[in-house]
Length: 229
Image (cartoon, rainbow, N blue to C red; front, side, top):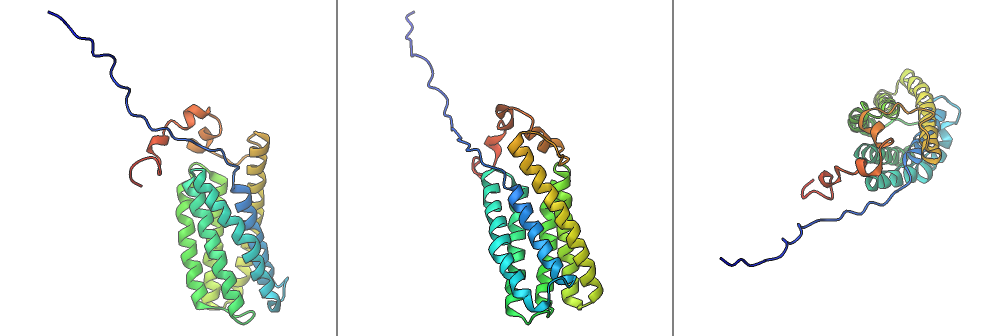
């Protein structure tokens, strides 16, 4: 019986995914958080008179919001949902604070802003708690930043000077933590060493230690590659 050679089977369909390396946006995002914290703390602790609150608002709009907004966009490109969500929430919340400061009398409190800040706390805690098991220190700083939003919101709702002082002091802690995280992330990205530590664990630690081939093996399951979000 004669047979016919039909040739090799056609190759299976493949989809090639191109990845572009990007610089880490975490230093810019955390430095923006540090700047925002020290600006508002200066008002809350009386280092800057209320009449100069407009200068703080412009600082938030021209320095902090752009740093964190761009950081959020770059985090999307870097495929880090925790960072992009957190930086986006921070950018939007600081913008709301700045606009309120520019449209209300100096030193005045606002129930509307208070509600927004309490909401900003809840929104920020979502990515912070998701990232806490893997990115311990950055997530803890975000938790403290969310707590600062909450306490500032309570001050805006109650006009209590005690809450104003407490949130100002907490702002100094947030500023110190944000500066440390920015320095550590920048040092690691520029020098290729994990010191000073950010206490990365699990997937975050693996991502900075494994080869590129291992790190991207799950890329087919990520948003933008899989069929649905």
